[in-house]
Every structure is written in C-alpha cells, then in structure tokens.
Image (tube, rainbow, N blue to C red):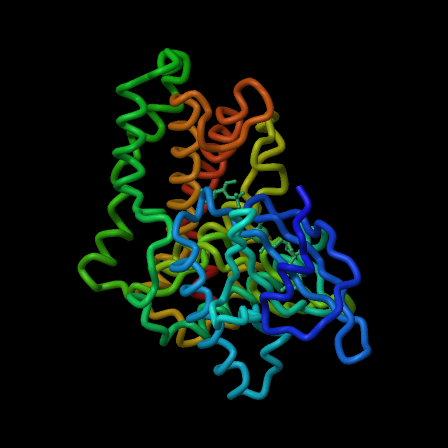
Amino acid sequence: MAYDFNKVLSNFQLDVELISCERYGEGHINETYLAVVKEDGKEKNYIVQKINSNLFKDVDKLMNNIRLVTEFNREKIKARGGNPDRESLSIVYAKDGKPYYHCESCDAYFRVYKFITDAIAYQVVEKPEHFYESAVAFGNFANLLAEFDATKLYEVLPDFHNTEKRFRDFEASLKADKMGRAASVKEEIDFYLSRKDYCGRIVNLLRSGEMPTKVTHNDTKLNNVMLDANTGKNVAVIDLDTIMPGSICYDFGDSIRFGCNPAAEDEPDLSKVNFDINLFESYAKGYLSAVGKGATQIERDNLAFGAILMTYECGMRFLADYLDGDVYFRTHREGHNLDRTRTQIKLVKDMEKLLPEMEAIIKKY
Ligand code: ADP
Ligand code: GN1
Ligand code: MG
C-alpha cells in the first residue's frame, strides 16, 4: 500500500520537496522507505518508517523511549567530538513537536530519521571483521548508555527476557499440547525441562540488585548495525524499538547466539550447525574493547553464560510455538519451528562443552 508521502513529510519539521519514496532495506518489523528529497537546492535522503502498531500497541511510549535514548546518546557523542548525525539514530520531529506523526485518515504512524550516509547494514556475516565491528558497535552502545537510568524506559514487550516466565509459558504450552505434538518431541522437551536451573540465574541477580539493570537493545543482530561502506568500520546501532531495561548479558548473548553459528538459524541439517569459538573470540574482543566501564565485574562474569541462556531461551520459545501450532514466529514449512529448536539445542550443547574456554576468553580481554 502506498501512502501520501507528500502529506506525511509535510507534517514533519522539514523544508523539502519530495522527489521519490520507495520501500527500503530488509527489516521484518516495520515498513521502511527511503525518501529522496530536495533540500536547500541539494538532493538528500531521509528514512521514513511506518511503525508496526500491531506489535507496538503504544506508539507514543515507544517513541518516547527512542527519543530519550537517542537524545542521551547524541549529547554523549557530541561531548567526545563525534558526529551525532552519523553515529546515532537521529529523530526528525513532527511539526507538533512529537517524535512521530499519526495520519488520521490512513490510521498509520510514521517516523522520520536522518539518513546515515555511506553505511551498510549487512544481512549476513560476509567477513569475520563485520562481526567484530558489530561487537564494537554494541559494546560502544552499552558504554554510552551505562549511565542512563533504565527505569525511565517503558517496557515495550514486558518480560521479554524473563527466562523464568518464558519457562512457565513453555510449561503451559506443554500442558495444553493443542496440536498433540508433544509425544513426538519428547527428547527436545526433556532437554529444556532438565535445564530449568538456567532460567533463574540472571533474573535473580537483577532482582537482588547484585547485577545492575541496564538499557538493553534486545535485537543485537548484525543487520541492526550500520558499517562504513568504504572502511567497513562500525558507524551506528539502529533499530531501537526494543530498547528496554534488562541485562547487558542478554544483548551480548543474543549476538553470540545468532552470529557464532555459520549455518542458518533454521538449518535442518544439524551437521552444518556448530558453535564457532573463533567467532566468539572475535566478538568478545570487539565488545570488551569498547564497553569499558559499561560492564561491571558481575556482568563480565556472566557474559559467556548469557550466550547459553539466550540460546536456551530462544530455542524454548521456538519449541513452545511449535507446540502451540506455530502462531508467533512466521513459519514457511512443516516443522519449521522444530528445525529452529534443534539448531538452538545443538548450539547450547556445544557451548556447554566450551564454557570454560569461553569464560577464559572473556577474562583474557
Ligand atoms: P526493522 O525493525 O523492520 O528491522 P530497521 O529500523 O532495522 O527496521 O530498518 C530496516 C533497514 O533500513 C535497516 O536494516 C537499514 O538498512 C535501513 N535503515 C534504517 N534506519 C536507517 C538510517 N537512519 N539510515 C540509513 N539506513 C537506515
Ligand atoms: C524475532 O523479528 P526478529 O527476527 O528481529 C524475535 C527475537 C528472536 C528472533 C529469532 C520481538 O526477532 O526475540 O530472537 O525472532 N523478536 C521478537 O529469530 O519476538
Ligand atoms: Mg532491523
């Protein structure tokens, strides 16, 4: 569906003439468009996004989170002599001062970001250096936000990484066994039940205050980092929809879960799926070189475990969804969620064997 982008842009604090506005990028959550405009006689780009308001029910609160975090980051970047328009996502405000515009006639929510120039968001790890650079970007992001008061943020998707809650949801799916699938996946179910003690470790440290609650990104995949088109160096972290209070071990762990497996997340041939400790080392080195005082000792002590936990949790979510009849994660074939579950189980088993080495790598950097 095409929107009247002339009208949309006229509601933002921009003095531009629209040349074109086409779908852009490969995000799965929002509808992203590249607006090419004429501004001060020159051609310039902006990112326009139609926000997914089915998933994000309270757009006002969602955008307030992004406003708080980007304004905080922009000030920090300026203070250290950087270029905030390139190193941070930057909001273009609507004429009424809000960080978004609601089109009444089409009932859609739009936001506009400054375009991060000469940079690329890669979909897959083409070179190990890309993965390393994404680690530097996320480490730097955690460093910038270490002093940000996480309680100011609205919990966009409550209990997102509350693994104890995820376990209870899994048990409920198992009990209901809506599709009658449980009997055929007993081995996978037992895998998750037998590791129940993983679930409480981080949430309890957060609850007791032993581990600080920080701002977390919650979608720390490679395609949410912009890398310089010429040098390959990291430029900025984008896609801030799921910033919420949590543990930095979640963000670190989720990057590892996704990026240290040379095969796809849904690869049916498990012989291709394995945890690559060299990629882990590369990520750990990049992350720890940038995070600085953004990671305290107790957080550092739990980074390697965070990778196991995120992989365990994600696989358990895939399996629960399989038992529920594939209602949450988009599936493209029979047993798709089960294939995803099995890759995550394989990765957890690999990591369990390598945990001492992983911990030694964290200590080394
Ligand atoms: P989704 O939540 O749907 O994943 P993203 O916010 O990640 O959406 O944006 C999708 C894609 O659009 C990104 O992968 C990137 O290629 C591009 N993009 C998003 N924001 C910017 C920006 N400020 N500058 C340049 N490109 C951007
Ligand atoms: C979902 O939409 P995407 O691919 O960025 C999920 C993540 C999972 C991931 C697994 C909001 O992320 O938590 O790790 O799938 N996001 C949400 O592929 O549930
Ligand atoms: Mg994205």
